Length: 256
Ligand code: HEC
Ligand code: HEC
Image (cartoon, rainbow, N blue to C red; front, side):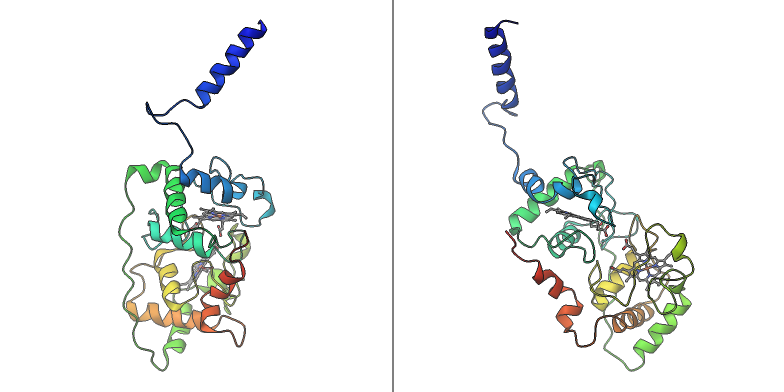
């Protein structure tokens, strides 16, 4: 190839890479793609397959977004998460994992990266997520709720995985690849308030052994159980804010 031919090939290559997507518009990466590349791809991978350069450093692997399966959802087991579910996980992070709070992003950046992440899985294009499972109204605090919750914990056999004292060491734990959470530790991935615990128990964590108990426990049992689990967590003296995971979130704010 002559040098002028080579120059032509190079020029065509340049033109192609800058080719407008739609006549009259110059292609530039969308805001969502830009946020993703800057803040997420190092762990979740350029293609969203969970295989970013840093992925191997984490005991819990970064989510593969191409599968469209999510742990933290307000929607029924096996269903897609809502945008609000994704926003919560992104902004607050999943404590105890490499998923640190991305609370340095603006709201517009969060919304844009959510759209981008959704575009990585065909599941979102097929149908929108269903409505959240309604969380039963919280009954007023009552004497004996925590003690009744302990009984529900036993009756529902949570200890099979989480252990009698809820330390994540039940009889089945050794056979599980994704280990049951130590329910005495805080903060939780999905939030640590009784309401967050009710949500985790009724919707389950997709892609893990944590089942959904939707319709298996009645409303009173759910809240008693959640209050019991809430009561066993947290170092002595933590504030309610810290119990709900905010302390953790704040320590990671604005690192840019
Ligand atoms: C330092 C590594 C790291 C970075 C950076 C990171 N993540 Fe994650 N992310 C993880 C890990 C690890 C998990 C898996 C946690 C788990 O499964 O418990 C995860 C999980 C998630 C989940 C799944 C929550 C669920 O319900 O299953 C979403 C959504 C998510 N990340 C979005 C993002 C977005 C968007 C960005 C960029 C703005 C980002 N992450 C940046 C490591 C990271
Ligand atoms: C078959 C095993 C199994 C059973 C039974 C089970 N869990 Fe889990 N649970 C898990 C696993 C595994 C996880 C961790 C998932 C993860 O972090 O990826 C988990 C996570 C959780 C979490 C979320 C913690 C967080 O960080 O957000 C809560 C809360 C929880 N379980 C409560 C319960 C309660 C209450 C019961 C009984 C009604 C129960 N689980 C029954 C396996 C189980």
